[in-house]
Image 1 (cartoon, one colour):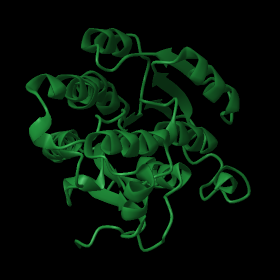
Image 2: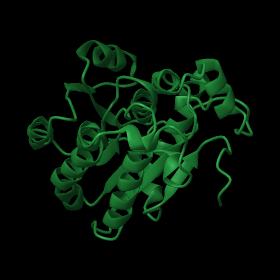
Image 3: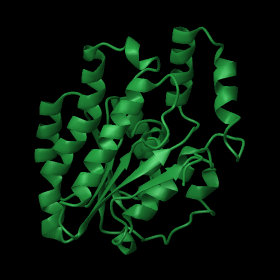
Image 4: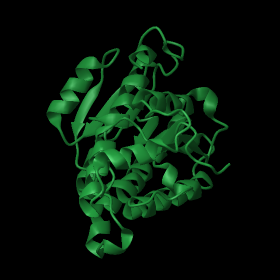
Amino acid sequence: MEELLDDGFPFAEDALEGQTALVCGASKGIGRACALMLARAGARVVACARSQTDLDSLVSEMHGDGHEAVVLDLEDIEAVRRAMSSMGGIQIVVNNSGGPPGGALLENTLEDFEGPFRRHLHAAHTIVQMLSPGMKKAGSGRIVNIISTSVREPIDNIGLSNTLRGAMASWSKSLSRELDPCITINNILPGFTDTDRLDSLASSISERTGSPVEDITEGWLSGVPIQRLVDPLETAVAVTFLCLPSSGAIRGVSLAIDGGRMRSI
């Protein structure tokens, strides 16, 4: 799918020229793909993650100039506040972070909820609270949250993740009724995507259930009509579309990029 960043690039070269995009969880997987795609569309990208090495590698690969790497742990809400207070004008935000380990929900302790909720819901809320006034002043804002198809159809053996994603979706829908008319907020619901997160999730479920990793992944793909994993760059195309100036009427939606896995309408 690398052609999506080359001859197969689906947008105008300068579609996001003059826009600055904050991409969270940008060092790997979908976050990394979003940073690359938004930069290719002409945006200046501020890429956030915990690994300086991974961020430096990402910035060196991005199209264009002026991109920035910010080392940030989204579980540290005070650090998030400090980082947001020092940001310049941001017109695009991609809220994205790694999910919790797999396993049965009844086996989770209350403490298990704390870290995932901080780096997802609490961090996203803090970011939007602090950056949306600047979007309003600039007359334009695009917020895209990377969540999961589990908000519509819970996925077995990832109960904590299902719970968290549902909270994020409700938070986003509520904000779609409150934010200034010039600011859109939408969700991307990835299906089974070719990322390190999917590999670690399969391993986590295997450890807790005793099922072989191969059986877990085969079971996942058996319900996907395209019969393959989604490439992160395919998801990044949808994210970029929602960030276009022409997408201002798309607000409060949850768009599945799942290869047709979900059976619901």
